[in-house]
Image 1 (cartoon, rainbow, N blue to C red):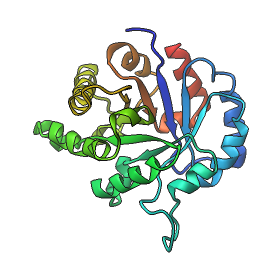
Image 2 (image 1 turned 60 degrees about the horizontal axis):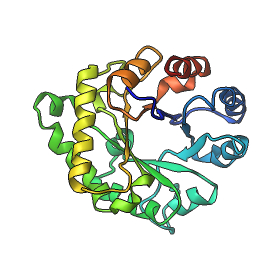
Image 3 (image 1 turned 30 degrees about the vertical axis):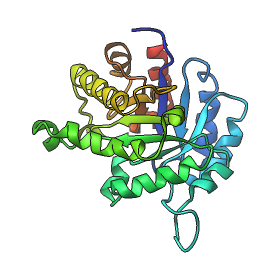
Length: 248
């Protein structure tokens, strides 16, 4: 595989506190130069995390945003608020959010709100094990991709990343074969190319789902993934540092 940039995005989910983040990022600064890094942080720590990492190339992002601009939506955070605290990106459509009720229509509204900011988008897509076994996952993934197709023009795709996360691999310790990952990522890229025949820049397609220090190099070298989205394994700074070392 070529030595193109390999993006490593970490999703902390509902973990960390002020002290642990400060300690974590002090170690991240030591490895930030080796590969493009991004961290999706709980809302309450976004501004402080951005401040801590302000003199690095590390990207700080949110884990979700509201489908609304403002108003009586208690507990929600708007795309404009995420931009206001300096976020570089926002994850949308994570399977855990879809499981709690986010429909493709909801996700498209969120993408539309983010489009009106300077915040980049990481759209998560992925199928269930049943859809994989029934060979219906291709149509399912295409339906999820339609939210991007309906929102972003070809000249806006540099603001978009796609994270392919098979639902059955998230947090289970089960990783699809490299052949399956490769085939699915190539299929996603073909779907995007079919919709945008002449884009200025194609979206990066990442793989997520039980990524760890034992498989990250295999994913980098033996699939067409442009990077990875790491969940639980990113919370242990020593393991995360070993992951970065393994691919550099």
